[in-house]
Image 1 (spheres, rainbow, N blue to C red):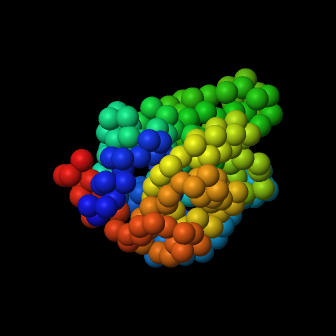
Image 2 (image 1 turned 90 degrees about the vertical axis):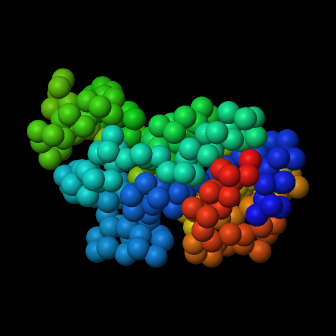
Length: 241
């Protein structure tokens, strides 16, 4: 881990790539981990766009304690350390697959959300937009939040399976990854495409990878350093940098 600290301190353009694993330390289930969400029955329907249009109550019911109680969740050590390293000028951006807003809550300034964000919802009928707090308020009184203007169903600006990733986020992520001389891959299984291919842009530009994840990833053979335990790794970083 001394080598990791040295790599961070001597990097010119370090970028973090984060997945759901970093938020398990905040009490949020990941997706493909040992006890992940996708071990549960019908979990694949939660973020399926066709099923959302068929039965939006299923999505809101399954995510009420995962997304819509985020005020009760606190950033993990990983979130807070990434924000601190950004403030020190070491981390230039966080590219995330996550939709839990905890990077922003921890203080990270440059967060590229590849899979969208629940910060904004929109009516699928008239396109009127609502902020996160307004939707949380609606869910306190109803199973499905509806539009005040036309009574249409509200959908978060999260990328569901069957939808395309936001072009601007992809473009921004590719730009940062292509310039990175060091990428920290944290808590991601690196199997959900096209987001999982982002660290390859750094490798193609002779950047180095450090992977911290509790399960193997397809890019492990290309990592300069590989660790299993996020808490242990970031406790070391917090105490030594």
